[in-house]
Length: 414
Image (cartoon, rainbow, N blue to C red; front, side, top):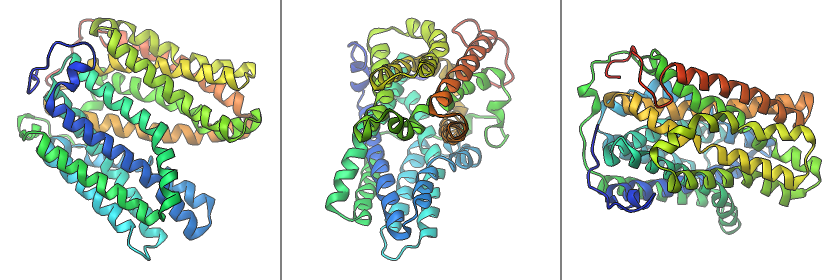
């Protein structure tokens, strides 16, 4: 078990994490990069639409933010452990800044813009996985790591709530290409923070005897495989209401205001659930409630079968979002299950898979709603999701992923 680079004062909850100077640098870099990514998504989507007047290509710009994650996770995951973490993080930020800078060049064609968008999505899982693995070096493998990872997720959810609004306001003042310069600046600032605010650590690969490519050594171990599925499967179902928010708001006759509320309810519930679990529950309690919450988090979606109005729908989404606090327990089991020398690869695969299944879930939600209606699609996702989550909970207990004794596994070092 690695120890924190600097002991944090024994204060309550998230204060212990923010007391670690190196984490504050990682946290600030995450805030900057998240805001930059959101601004780039809005600006690039508007730019593509201005150039083509095609809603399809504008939507494809958003979709390209999800689909290439699988490629980056499968092909580039080993880089997270093969090179020093700080070098990987700074390098990814600089590559992303360069890609966005090329988007701002006047005359850049649609093909180039979409190709650069794909490049950003390919690099993203390597950056995210390396950053998460670095958290374990900075904060240790225990409770501080779980709280630190929770804070980064809270930032991501909160950025969705404010980032799109800020991006829209920015585009009222400047052109899309000029707005993209803000993203270039945030990536460069993130690189500077990580370079100056985190210390050099040697590559994990030097301590590893693994030679298998990509995610194969992780997927071969049943315990790690179950944990990955416990992160991915619920996420594939949880995005269904978000993907169908626009047609659902239209069915309710709630207009743009209703659509905004429906889009915000799930992230608000998620932030509230994580804050409560991180600040008020101890490590043992968070692990104890992880499997029950996993089984319950999608249960509110079944309420869509009762044809709820706007207010009731918002309550259902808030409850479902709050149930996602189960991830704090999963975080602890995951970092405990994966050997330190494979941690960067594991976090990269985890993040790449998470983004990929969300993209697939959104696409399948559209197909289901087209054939059976929005309410039926959401309620059906709730039924299928609850059944899958219960099956995963049973598998977790069978493999020792419930906080109990670990069975023998096939992955070295576990």
